[in-house]
Length: 166
Length: 402
Image: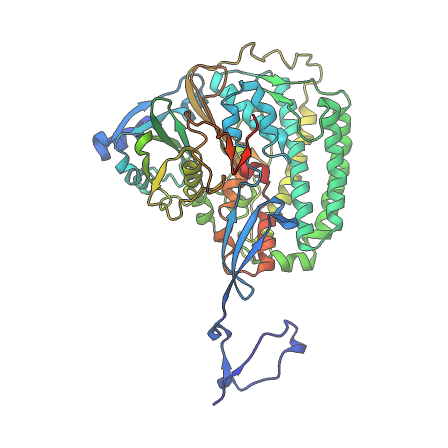
């Protein structure tokens, strides 16, 4: 199914909650794998994901990647790259929230692979995925200060009393 | 009536306990035992690196398994934000150090797709040749160390002997044996060494014999089959929903290979089968199937190499750096690019804001996602089986932790 058609179907089902379609131009591959739809109202994210997974025409059964992004203007994004192994089409969603109040609903109940991706997103970017069964840091130490992939992150001078080189 | 307990003493019928009247048998599950927490790792040979598993045990039975990662974490993604696009390549090497060529290929393709760069046909041939050689090298390590985990020492040595030939070809061409920095955005660092094609021809012949030998020694060994068949069964729907990829997914019987389903480079011109598990000795999706898929893929890669040598553009004198852009500065935009690594789907999510360094570069590491299925797969099996399951997932911690 064409990506713009999928986007149209989403807009018919969710109205204004799903925002516009951003298309990438440089190559055909980039158009297929870089374009994304905004989720305007983050509270609807889980419902949108369930719709994408369960609708017989769509059947996005595989969450390829859940990534997080600091937009540099005080907002953070969670990006969902989806794929249907049955219909062989792909789609991407982007949910943007304010950095001071970064809460995005968890989709672990929709795709179990989101579990560790969301833990990494919390660890590295500090997006709190609400409803996640076990939201702990995954790569860094539990006591690590801050979330390193945020653009305003400063490497601490001392860590556990040891001077941090560089 | 007094309760008589019957313990399973041995699998051997001869040593079975004396017969008891059926009415007196009490099922062992009525025994109340205390749960125990066991730490495996971080330094443990079967974790293939530095990984800590916190295992909750009921007797010998695994009730729960919690992996703790991060011992090899270098924050690759933060590093990339301070480097130019070509400078990232050596860091990509160090993620999956057993399949550095494939990782390089994945990254180079991601940036090329973001910029819309086409590379010469000769470069594509060399890339695919090296990617397939690296795939064999990686599967050789996977199969060899899997035998080692389970107690078969000899196949490991045979595998490493053959891997040496592949590394020699890489060394002749680019000077490095493990971490190459060979596949660049838009080209390659060096042209192919003239000896490599003849070496490759000899290697294929030799390696086919090794493939048969490893099958005879390991795959169809009764002890190996007993240790892996019916162990760690992963259902196909669970595998897809959990994001499994590579041999882990195909072992569950899902015919899915990005070289065929989302073709890149010159793979559409090549003939190869997508190998899937079939529950040969046990249940579909068990440890044996995952091992079996690796063995089959190894053979398929040899077939691909043969086809490449047949179709090789012999008199092509194209400079391998002719398509390397003078200035790598993609226009603002983003892309998710994926390739088939020996371990599964390696994806790069790159966001460019019209600068010379990536604004954000996020890696979808196949081993990371496959490892996240370990708790699902290992529940209900014995501790010794947990080692067999972990080995069959084939993780590289450099890539899990990045």
